[in-house]
Image 1 (cartoon, rainbow, N blue to C red):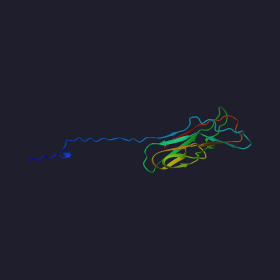
Image 2: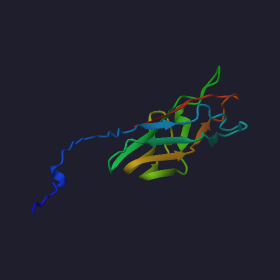
Image 3: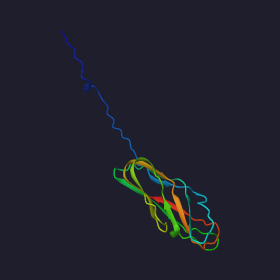
Image 4: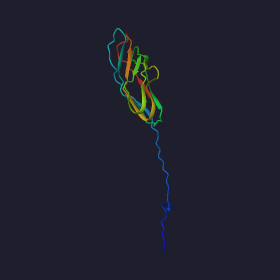
Length: 163
């Protein structure tokens, strides 16, 4: 009697392919309105006054896939508010209040609310980040106007950045 035996699967010819995929880290970006419009209007009076208004939505998107414990800082700086001729309102009279921060992802967010924007000033910080995240806020800009400031339209630029 003749017995036949089957070869085990490992004895069959094989071809092994090693494949890879690459996941690249995204970026860190910030967006803000290009034209915030009029922050407010008030009549000049005997004493100093403050004109405040919303700047519009500012958003930081962090798609770097940052390791746990990472962070970022959003900053802002202002130019003086000027008119075509005459005195200006200096950046030392321009304040920033971030307001409520809406978040997506895991991080701890802090509004820094600088009293003036004469230099690059932290406005929102994110710490204890894990993975990708987004933070959105609508800051209020406060412009302190001296009592003797001439009537007119004053224009300034507020620049945001993130790192």
